[in-house]
Image 1 (cartoon, rainbow, N blue to C red):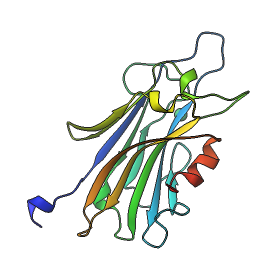
Image 2 (spheres, rainbow, N blue to C red):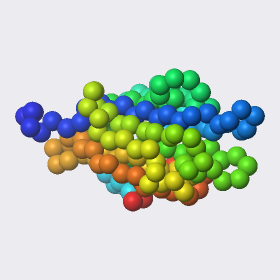
Image 3 (cartoon, protein in one colour):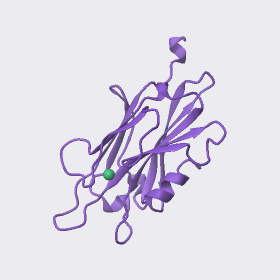
Length: 174
Ligand SMILES: [Ca+2]
């Protein structure tokens, strides 16, 4: 393969936020990845990866999970080994959802949220969710195969209103 054609190999998505004030219900944000096949690239996900669901072939891994945002550095980390995905998977969308408890919680309610997408040391994108402040979930990155099967990255920030489950089934639609 020519080096000019080389697509994205492996990316890391990191998510951070600050904990809720003492005595209030914790904020729980989740990184969610959804994979799609060539027959339905904008349909229902082929499978999802998040705190409660693993990728069947181990190519997408949630390395760190947090339910509170407490601690230093990244609170949640997901690794996507795109080059290892089977050829039938042609699109991967990554999103962040806020667990909804009593009432509706949006990114505007979460202190200092931030997401970053990196390939090695190269930053592909980052966001503080300012463009999705009134949303309860948002897609943050999209990866799709090119003509030669190589992976390309597209920066997105698309807000969604609904609980994490609804978001997960709808995140591929646009
Ligand atoms: Ca979480």
